[in-house]
Image: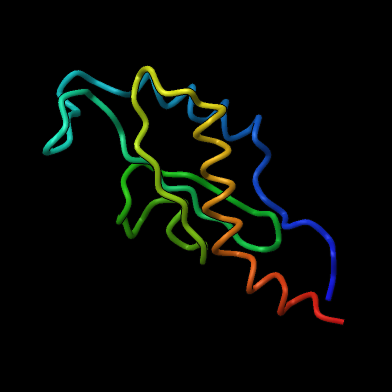
Length: 106
């Protein structure tokens, strides 16, 4: 079995994308049962290292939809984007691990 690392989105790229998305969190974006404005963000990725993100978690037309593995987070204005980027990578790693190991067996 290969010991090569999974081709996950870089933490810095994810962090910068989340920082930019914070600008789109409007006061009226409050999820049911929550008290603070936020945006749901979905990051789709594959084992080739390609990835994209979209707001929401079930859009059939967003750029993340066509990727087989999804990480979903809730982004708030005061979220620590580096920590969220690590969470995204952890979610994707768990989802991609089996496919990666199958594709890279010796």
